[in-house]
Length: 320
Image 1 (cartoon, rainbow, N blue to C red):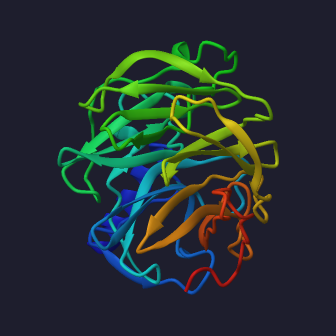
Image 2 (cartoon, one colour):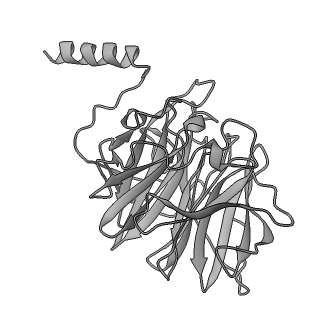
């Protein structure tokens, strides 16, 4: 019976376009032994938030080594209380959960909590940005809108089809929520309190020194706002600062160099138990890691006295 069931699942997987399936039905536990922190799967495009004594990590899921393009069909959730011992949860959201996402690509996203609900903003290549909603950080997540929140029509200065990707959401101290996104051009808008509607007009970010590629991330420290983003290709990460999420932004330089064995880079920056951390991906799993089979890493982030950020030191040892 078990052999028959597995064969049936593989047949279903083949005809639905999935060449790799995840049969996990219960949380699993593992210990990170440095960078990359996750070695049983290929993970990319990290996002994270802290709730209580736990850090919750949200990841894209690359197919295994040997790929010639990005093959991503679902998203993964992890949690930890010490950055060493981790829990991996069953897949809680798939690209097929968004019926309008004709691209079939489960690209980068970010999750956030508000009013007792969890909202996971995801990108789907050229189909637009959607929102998943759940009662628990590990899900399961359901399509909150039944349609995209944002599409290429909202990327008014962009001419290419994959402009509407890489959403990042930030809630300021006054309760106002913002969403940032974009490839080649960076856009942002306010969100209504319900977190599933845009409030007002979409604006584009531009400032001296900006060489923007993708992956915006907003964080705040000591009343100073930090906009980090991917620059160039192969990708580095740069950042700018402002006294307001609406700008003006002042370019501060490169934050992270090209991540080993990966053309892309993607960051999350946050404070956890009094320390600041930089979460990113590289192609570091030997020997099959690479630009299309990436892996999430974590290293410490340090500030200078003037509020600027020290250049990130990427390590094999990680933060253990």
